[in-house]
Image (cartoon, rainbow, N blue to C red):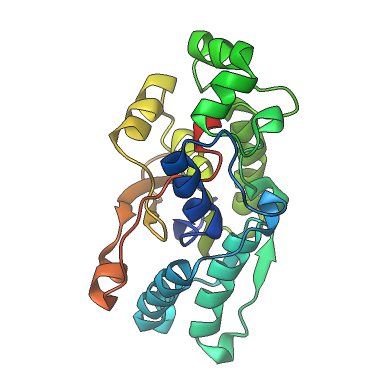
Length: 253
């Protein structure tokens, strides 16, 4: 039977970013806005985020060559690219592995709610706070922004590309919290309530690993089976602190 999916897919949230730190500071101070000093796409890893990326890279490099990723895809956001490049640099030099950027893996776009804390949204855009309460995060789309459904739409296209070009390969994806959750929604054919329940149980950990392996006998064209979610053993083993810090735009997420 022809296998349409990769042999294995790892989906990783980037390491802790300077935006995660700025968001905590804004919440602690009771500010309406999160100061990140530029575009969200340009927010780099924090020093801790680099440490986490190094720990995860070491774990991947300890796998046998036949078990390592052969393809690395990343969101264009600087924090995701740096996490992905750190992993690529630790893998076998003979493979010449590079990071491919795909804008469909970018962070959820928050539009007019960009860089606002929950307090900021309630004070500056009370109508949007009410719309979100009524519609729920899955369907609410802020002006100039995206809903979770919008993210899912572009990720369906992304997964089609992966199945077309990387069938029977081992693929590593480095992206963002909402992307990880929305990928689970698509791959596992979850309902709105099921994915939101997973979200309520806790944030996706920085450099946490979500892993799928192919089950060719499951269905026509093969299928993917979840084997790990929020896997943090690589960080713990390396002594890197485990963080599940919320993104700078968490109030709008």
